[in-house]
Image (cartoon, rainbow, N blue to C red):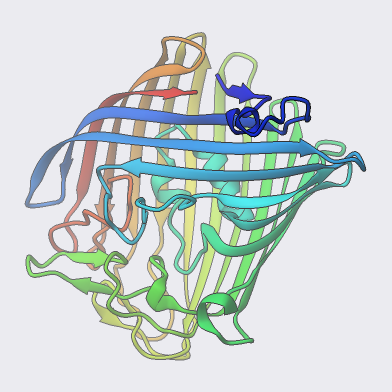
Length: 381
């Protein structure tokens, strides 16, 4: 349910009752649950709360186009204060303005990149999103300085193209990025593909590309409180995926992600191992998810396989396998209860987390497996 205010209170205060007002929408979600997570040698229980609130607007212009804008805020207690979420600031997720018309939509500001949006939308509320969707060495999920275009849907196809102004963060004219993505939908079939390239971005300020470093307890922390990384980094991310939903409620989803990462200066590490400046490192990732959606019930079973990092002096046995199972029970159009279990089988030199933030709460030591169970309720408004 969304709340729309055709006449804003501030307009009344200024006596503008006779003026046409822009449409403003308030929407979002709230998620509350109880979870237990195992990081290898440590088991922790926690109450989780997480929510998003979105203020967006649309104003019809005299030429027939719409001016659109969005400000979005996330609040959560699991990753509170981390550099990964920066959840104390308005617009920490989306903050943009743009134009909308028959030609499509143009936006400028901060929003999800095309490649990330493909998997984020496809795997949302399934339990499989945190690993396959979120992981990408050097992949920009939500760019701070981005100009993007999204086409209308034509013949089942929809395309997007983004340009990322990395130089606003680095001050170097050679620092930039781009992202192209597309989907094709025909009945129960959906095909997705995307590619992102980034040049010269600052890996010391990027959670996916910073240094992973060993903590006092022996665990490796990937990205939060960045104290390393290459300040001149290149990356490439490619994704292809497909989904088919049968009329009987069953479905199958599969995907492949290719990631290449080049630290052009020293400072970047992987699992505590220093990476060579100027070397290309790459990883492959595969996902398979089975689903069943019928009436009030959703069931999802997911498997993700991350290969070892290859290139230069990359450590062997640096991959992982992730398993997920989730059940949703819909209590209304907007609210559902859920139970979810995740398990990560880490290789000898990896320590990935089963928590929502893949880069936090990693294994107590490299090679330890991690897992998480949670029951909760989520509502959209």
